Image (cartoon, rainbow, N blue to C red; front, side):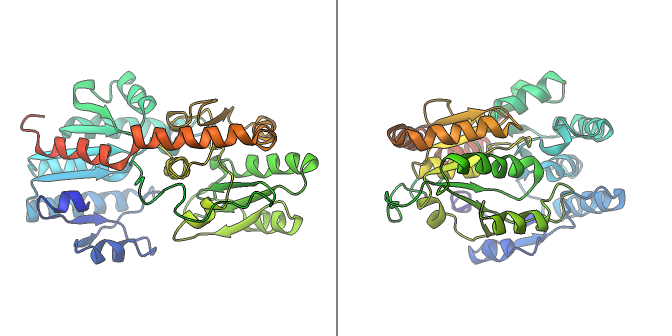
Length: 355
């Protein structure tokens, strides 16, 4: 956003989630326009209100470029911007989410496909965060290759997330695994805890830290009672939501994300790798774009706590492999995922004369 602001006026429109995000935007000197946006709501009246709010704002402010992120702004914003005759409409699909998940009901998948079929032709260009999502929508004739490309996620600031920004881990303490995520079932929280239970049979001192908040708007939110019970058993340390993950990540030895959610590019994997942490993730959309099996981490099958435990045991028993994977991950972030690469690609599309 800072790079874009240097080239012209910027306004951010978004939902007000009560997490202080809008204040952070305004503190950067960028106006924030609240929208009636509920990412998980399915009330048709709410969807119409969002579409109408976007259309009215585009008609009134006449922006030269609009850039939509996440599913509802991409769908409703693209249509509204085209009707309002916005000259340049750019989208970033940050993951296909639960609508394209293996467990999702077919009616929702069909509805979202129909909406994408309406919206994407209205935009001039669409970025995807992984090749799987581009191939999925292209294969279903929802996205055209000449109007789409893949970005390396949202990128990571390799200066902010540096290996030795904080003190090195203490080699005398027990090994520490960390999972950072919204606390949803399809992020693999149950698998993380079950794998922890298996590992602690052989290495009882091993620590398992869980950072994240219970997203109460999601039907897949983890029950509070389960989290409290796991803490009582001493299986996990639940830190809740934190503003800055770096101190926690710096003290960890391995970052874990056993997700079977339809990810874009998981930001936590980028941040952990930039801090030279070896990774364990599922062989899942988005995750496998970051983790090269045997190079900067290990990939395991989805919903397989036993395979996850085996990967953890391999990390415990092979400290040199952990260090080699951490170094390889840092180099990969600098080479492929630095946010400067993402910013440059986006700015090129903003200024490109023909789209």
